[in-house]
Length: 275
Image (cartoon, rainbow, N blue to C red; front, side, top):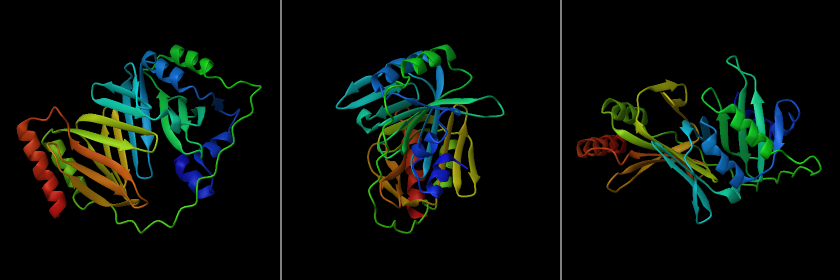
């Protein structure tokens, strides 16, 4: 069971559940976003993970140097970009989980209510010495009391989900068959992350529709969705909507698509609309 689902069943935030493991593979970290973002290009290849209620976006990336403007920090690299709103981050943790292939080590950022925003995993291709230096730099001062989690505001009952668009799996499979470079984007209220490139392996696992490609995994739970819509333009997008409000994911042909691939993409989208 994913920690997000366990926390939901227990009626607590994900960060509050993590805090019960302080001293057992979990440490609080100082929220120093500028220091974290400045260190990322020195960590080698790490796995960057963001998720929302429906979608999980996991991308292996060697972070470029960040740029910042308008209250956002941005990373733009080959086949990847990420935008962070620093003001959304209120809590940070180091987390080490057991795994048959060795410990899974990560830095995880959360909002004021303890909801997960961004997780950065140091795996085989990471510079672990640089990762240790970053952890030391972000160490939580022993004489400072932890910040308590705020309670999320009460919300009205969610409308009944309608699921994903009927032709979504067929769209992914058709885009893969045509080798169309696709921009696949997932966001929450603090981070937006995109993968750009052709899709290869599309796998259905119950309610989860997955892209399982080298260096990139995308997992979509269709149950929280209320359908999708097409946004027109030179490169039209398929936007997947959450039943609780907001956007689960966005797919469009990437800027590297040829004229023929763009035409194929428009035809694929039209089949989703009419299916």
